[in-house]
Picture 1: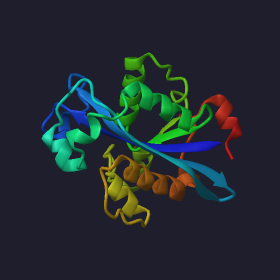
Picture 2: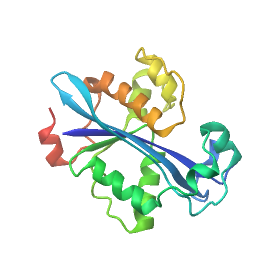
Picture 3: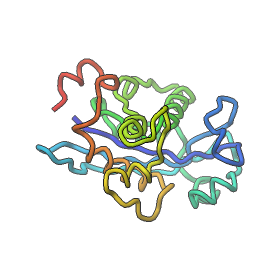
Picture 4: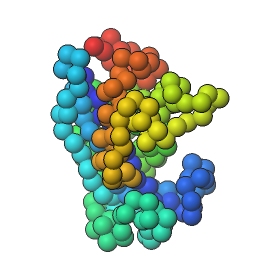
Length: 201
């Protein structure tokens, strides 16, 4: 089976990120990056990569805080492919039998919202999705449900974050490295469909 580790960069209507998860906050993907891994014995190999900007529709102006954080300018997204095209390409890239992996629950929520917005089924990921942040935080966090950042998760497993974070593909690559290093310690029982669980290596 394939493992698709992905990340989204979002434009949103909040000045800071602290309230971005609130349902009333307008948010939409402006960049999607992903790495598809395949397991070869005890190692993970990069099968392919995906990266695309997404043309915004809800928020025509880039939030200055988002631009400061990600470096993404309005000119980079205003002529990008529309959400429907990017989601179709991303679902084709992932394939029907992959397990999707994200750092946290926000990207999955936005993935659901994006599918709803364009009338796309979410069957290709809803039963095969792992929140890696939750499990890494349980292993290396301070407890009490505290969630650690991707950079902290990388350092916890002996990896150095490097430059370029808050770029969707770079963050997906970083998340993929953490996933591969901890694979044998991860509990996938709640994020795999029954059929996929039987096929797990």
